[in-house]
Image (cartoon, rainbow, N blue to C red; front, side, top):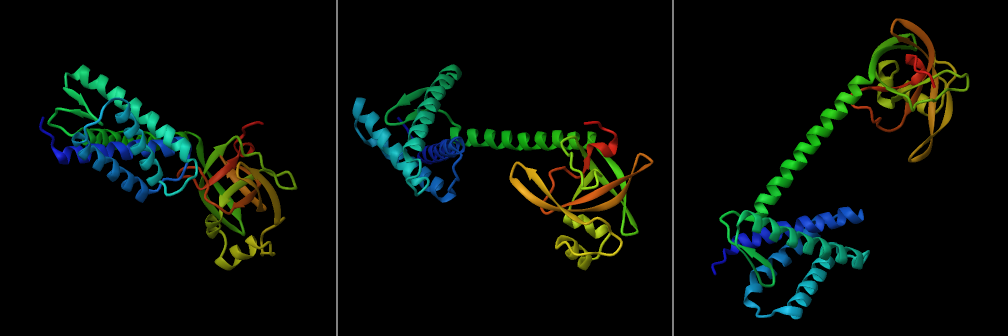
Length: 277
């Protein structure tokens, strides 16, 4: 039997690394790149020397389990959830091995088994798997971006906002979940802090964020806003909003973080575009 060491190293390193990443993703644990590389190298090294080890039966299974335990430990440099990640890694490894044998038999590729599963093929399996995985990831991200962009585009409109005696046209995402109102009952248009540069100087923006009075803005107040991340305080002040040719009294709410609304610059209250509660 002829064994190409480079293929064995490449295959087992990539496959072991992939299974370890899958294990940590499943357990929702942070991934240590250095740990994954080290564990993958250890597993690949064992795969190279395993044909020289004359063991079989129960002893071979115990040796495989011992190697998997070392890899699970090396992959993260911590004992946190060690038993869980070891058990899951072993489960994924044996499940992958069984599926691999079934696929190879279907394709007519010769398979042999010692301390690891081997095959007779001119193409390294690890390279094929990683290439397929990379392609799948790229396509997934591309499709996710396309669908998200289409979603935001179909639920957005341009509005003209007047405040501080200045007007600016901005693109807003129509969010039916935005039901914010200020103390006067005016619907709130939420914008990130950097968008304030359309109407205010840097000094005026700083004063607004600290709740200090600024010329030509009215009813500056602080709202307690609840979100999935908890409750935070939002600075709110009056403005005029022109939507579909109709001027409405509204308010601007300043978000301290980045808004999740694609290429839109604001999140519109549903009432501003005529969406009822």
